[in-house]
Length: 272
Image (cartoon, rainbow, N blue to C red; front, top):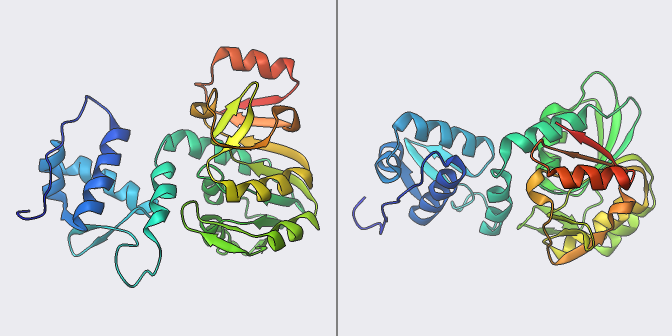
């Protein structure tokens, strides 16, 4: 470990999310590091580090090669930009909540449905729970979704294409927007980075707005998938008002004031 410029980390008690983020930072900075070295730096057991690395590997944040943890996409053979780190880091935040939300959303799909799937780390987790007993069609603009969907023989997947944005693994272009608007969906699963009473629904990346608007304008039922951390949050790019949403699926930490507010707005709320 000499010569790597590694800084020993001081951690708060029982803060798994912070620990995992620190592990990603360390692996990215050093390019490769052993489980033992991470254990010493983080002051936790090697078993704990192995569990964290397994989760990170499952989410394509790191790779494990020859006894080392390696930051994914850092090697030359991947050919992908390190900006995808933003998407990966978001994917490990509130992970259990996102998985529960995605699992519930997958259960809403019916035989023969046409589904729009937005980008976002919650929506991207839906592929692990999608129905396999009947056929349906999914149109998406996200690389993580595409990777999961191509494995399902019962799903007709459609990708409108466009320019690739590594930061959130999204494809977008005016031609893709036009393509989406030529179709209609029974349900649209929409993601958001911020949900606010007066300022509406927002996202981080401006290139995602056109796809989101196209999904909303061309679908029968609009379903917002968002963990509770997104409420009372505002990001820079507005794409919808709450009145446009038919259903919100979130976790049990949603504030009581929001439950009451959504009930008054006649927006169906599903807590998982």
